[in-house]
Length: 411
Image 1 (cartoon, rainbow, N blue to C red):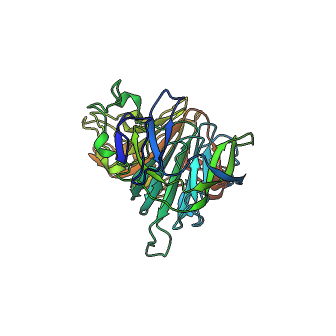
Image 2 (cartoon, helix red, strand yellow):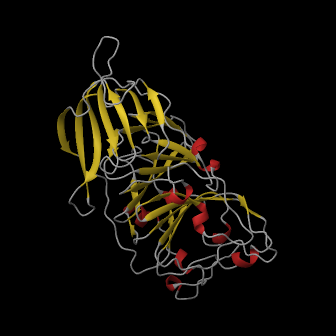
């Protein structure tokens, strides 16, 4: 992201000595993408950033997947996922393929120090407040934030110790983990990297760290997820560092974690129904992230505001419903906290009755996060544990479980 920031103490010229008040040298680290040929930042450490004293295996959480076979649309109830664990090791795999994994966790516990060396993470905060401590500095988070964390950024999630009226932990995280970098769409940016006027958000909406994080201590353990040769292609290691990884006294550059709140996105609307790319917010290799927000809808007198039936022949579509009342899914059982998976090879669209009801509607009150993937998604253990088996048959009003006689409400 070519948006320069400077935080803390820096020497006037890069790759030159920076010393503290007692004359002790600071250690410069270049953190950069694509082999010194893309965005980077320079960080200045009090200790040697490569000094490790131990390395042991970290057994990753269950990342096994099952194909969506036989092929059908799926409804997953993520609010059936039990609270537990922390924001990193407590994530439960919902969906995944070789390009992206989607996990979910409900927690009020702080995570270990963690680094994803496989790809960037884009974590949507469904609920809760807290901070993400990183070696670049601290990021406060709140409901509606996307927290974008570049590959190999050491960080720690620290939820606020608040509970809702039911006594359940407040922080609910929907983690989109790429095997690539996750960036604003290229069509939103100038050839030099500035957001263009037609983009639905801009640099003012991105909130990076404002000051360094000062961590103290020795023999600090960091969990590292990295490339491996197992069935998932991933492996885990516990690295123990001689000095605290949060010993950065200053940094500058164009690579750093940031938050972007979904409410700062400006929906694009039209005279007739607009296709999903107008809702795009981020892109990774072989996948995109979109968000659907409360908005005024189509203003042609005969327009049909809900989506037309469509076969997105190259993609699987995943919708996570996080607010409002999603018009196209009424009568399907989908509600807040639901996921719908509509795979490539299957034409999908509004539930019965929604098509007709939408004519003459002037605005929608709905909030959803969508991930489209260009390779088929498989089902993780959290998907298998939370599926609504009736969903696939709701368009027809009957299904095999009822011997072909089941009738579903469209209200």
